[in-house]
Length: 377
Ligand SMILES: Cc1cc2nc3c(=O)[nH]c(=O)nc-3n(C[C@H](O)[C@H](O)[C@H](O)COP(=O)(O)OP(=O)(O)OC[C@H]3O[C@@H](n4cnc5c(N)ncnc54)[C@H](O)[C@@H]3O)c2cc1C
Image (cartoon, rainbow, N blue to C red; front, side, top):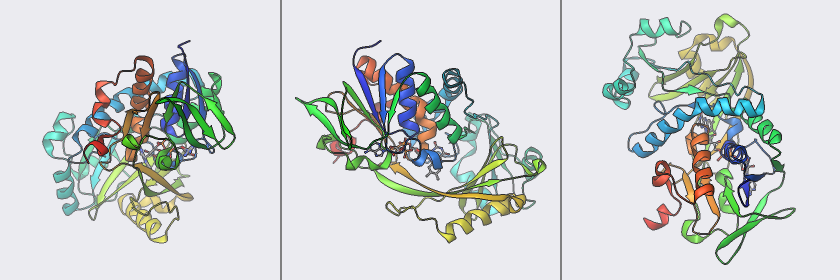
């Protein structure tokens, strides 16, 4: 077993993938979270979408997402070996469609043809996209199939990670971390509501709430804002009315997605709202999500509404995550994964394991180092 022990703060997808990766490499790991697996990761849609969630101007993040997505199949396989559970990885691709001619132009401008070409995709006619997904509305005006983008069932993933940790004898302590314990610029552990946990390394993955933890160095203390997302979960009883793959639609200039699960459940999402820490579900958001989903796939109107959910995405100033060592020795950050926490779970975990093992920062996460905002004023 490698020397020292690691405390992971936060049991969302980022903390759990990190704890699992470290423990499966032989590290002595424990996880601390008052509500394991119930943060934004529980609410998320589970898309692994390096292309269809890409934003102009965020090229280094897009590159990290492409590398992160590539790790998913082997990560899911390894996780199932340790957990003896299937995390619901589906690689049937994502069908992106335009609701009308205007939306088709918006889509084409956001994802230009050369970008599609590099991913082996081409623009398809309305008839071609309906051949792939017969449940689409007759008003849909073409689109493309993004084979690069797929999905995992985020709730099955969290359950698999928790089971794998249990099988690896990792303790998950239900408590809140109040502060970082340090001496002589070196981490010594954490102070929780219930006592002190000593550690040679602390990995901080508490989602949007990192600012409440005391004892972080001012020079790299992460500034994270919560970005509210409202999302719906439904069940389609009739197997003939179930989507074959994830569908994303551009509709009246807005984007919506429908993510089907193997069970017949599906997810409709999501709003992106700068509302502080409010988690209140609103009628207007639910109305807009259902309206746009029904206009894209009319049979949604027949589905049973199971749940309205609200989550807080942890976002940084540049919308890219903070992954890397703090100036405080032994402290490592993995926060601010915003829209990509599920996608980036395995690459974040792999990078952190390398930092703990070697002290070196992997090239892939070099642009995402802590303190970059403070250094840039
Ligand atoms: C509606 C919606 C849809 C989304 N869809 C997708 C998607 O399709 N694909 C994708 O990749 N991403 C998606 N995301 C984003 C994704 O959910 C987040 O990026 C991801 O969940 C962040 O994971 P995390 O582990 O950092 O945070 P969280 O999942 O929020 O977990 C943080 C954990 O830390 C714990 N914690 C907080 N403070 C403390 C403390 N002081 N001590 C101990 N523990 C603490 C919390 O209890 C919580 O369990 C979506 C988000 C939303 C809201």
